[in-house]
Image 1 (tube, rainbow, N blue to C red):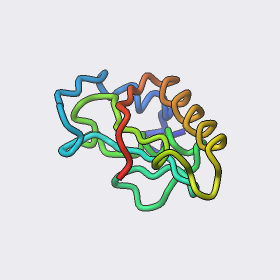
Image 2 (spheres, rainbow, N blue to C red):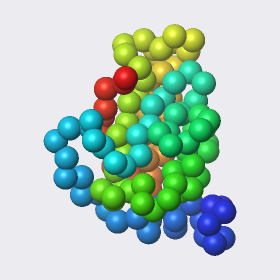
Image 3 (cartoon, one colour):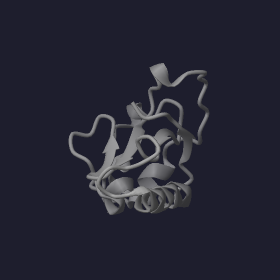
Image 4 (cartoon, rainbow, N blue to C red):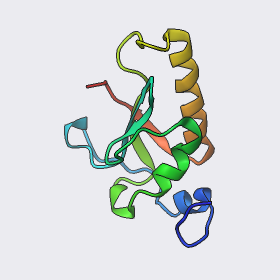
Length: 115
């Protein structure tokens, strides 16, 4: 359950309009950005990384103003070609898990290069 008014996380996220990202570059991206790293999922604007099971709740807790393009995020599945600390195979498994979670609530994602 999301702490917002006792509704479920899925209900909270479904209230955000469908994706309409009018952009050509990620340099001025306004919606959430997430990066999968060895210590968890980093969400721009969230102080600490979250674990995969906390992703939807963390996104649902973002203010509605964080979603001007609707249900779409910029997503960096892992930083570069290898992931120090967890290995490439584990990195791909985590990325797939994150993508499945986003797909389950119709959050679209745009692949973003890591910083």
